[in-house]
Length: 155
Image 1 (cartoon, rainbow, N blue to C red):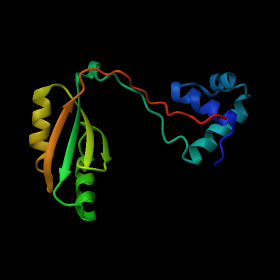
Image 2: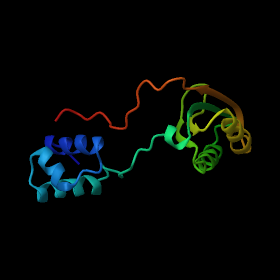
Image 3: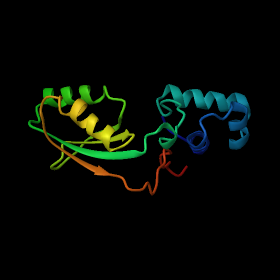
């Protein structure tokens, strides 16, 4: 799908506030409601807009510890990678999981309440996954920047 400047304006507004009504969105991007809704539906249909979510405050939910965990697997066979990915996706604490290059096979970010919850997660959830060779954790001391809106091309 080729995005024009109006599509990019719609995306910019929705990335800032996905709960905008169509009427308010149309006003902000200088369209009438019907063509605005048609464009939003096209963005959804073409997979440019994947879904709408509510972003919760981790601290308000008692999840004060953000931890990045490097996980090395014993082997790089396709089946081993697929099994690890399937198993890691089962855990709500895992916020992100990336297959990496270099020494570390995977990098995950977990949100947990405290060190005790992290220890429990590592011992009870991670270590039982077959094929894990090494686990290393790094703690986020302070969140300097967090955003969910992707950078958009100039239109």
